[in-house]
Length: 551
Image 1: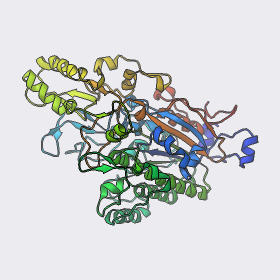
Image 2: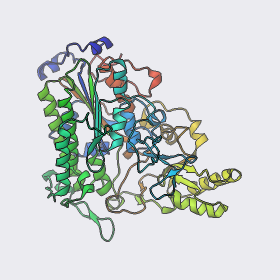
Image 3: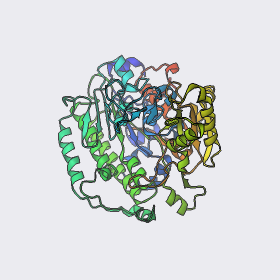
Image 4: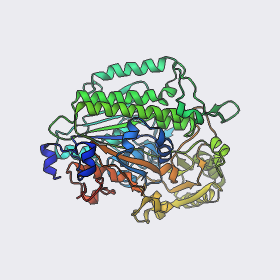
């Protein structure tokens, strides 16, 4: 299909009945609406584990074009970097979104405790006076590249781009710099950039009222029959056991976020915007980007393998089924893509009980605050020596370290991490910078190539720490936070990448592709030209047989 077809919004062609699809050559979809969905922390492991139970939207997606071994190919498998790859066609090394939070050692700002803070949040407008990583104005300014929607609107401003998410960073990184509407959950309600709320769908007021009612009321929970085998209590500490479904208490906003109700209301908002803004019914192709966050909150608060996650996936399946029903009813020609921003790993205690070797929690000695304090004392340096968001990933040397002691401090810090039994590898900044940008199947990349894929010379640390497999970078499980992600290992990198449209000829490709391949692939369906030199991804053929959407 040529670009002019998209710009002129010509007649959309689809394969007819299922019988015709089996006998005729598959048609290349020409959507008037692209629906791009990110399910936060929806790993390939979770997708495959529950696949036999799907009856709703996930079943339909699994029966389209399925790449169950997609990859968030970079090492920093966090929410912001992952979302930044999905609709930009670029890895974090190009998007500049190297982590949820990174550090700028030379520029301290007032933190929430009154002390200088050097931390930068990925969706923050750092130019706003008084802004810091915990008190910020939401903005896409730190995203260095355009999204699919940005490119579409640059060619044809009639295209509408709507982004809705349970997290601000999910909406910002998928929507981009020039959206018709961006909405996210701010902890109390769904909101927009626009303080006047003029761009919000009228239904937003009702949806926010429903969200408040969900939080305010105690909510009983029902374990789906298919989740009975996942219901087993596992002790996290002397006071806390997880793995069995518990009712949600009144006023527990954290538990609300970790529920199917949160995703359902996020989707309600997305569908309200779809209806009120008449997406897919205008003169150009539109984008609806939706990021569903509850799976991530469930994974962090209760792990990935208990009754809680099983119940969440059943609810997600139903929510996606409801979305498909609304899209079908509209008669709008659409294509849906679903993937995840990263994978996830179960909590250490259940891994240990289930016989996983080497599963353990991280040693507090690897926390930058702890390591930095000890090294500063050893070297006779005043103040914090190291800055970092956790016991792995990018670590920065404080600007307060005198010039004559910087090399000694770096060498001491490097040795501290390198010699620790829980550390797989440590890479210096110069070593990472000298590594060529990786190519080829992402499953075959070396460890330093994975780190190189999220390296930005302006934002990355002085060195990068990779923990060993199955080391959970949380020293001790606490209420609401027992498991996490962020590692360079397969359980955090592998995510499903799924496509569906009416008349799709089903096939499954088990080999690895990158989430950076999604944007150029979707662009090919609407005839949008994207220069190969501006992205890291490639167009992937979605059409079984001799035809191809890639040109």
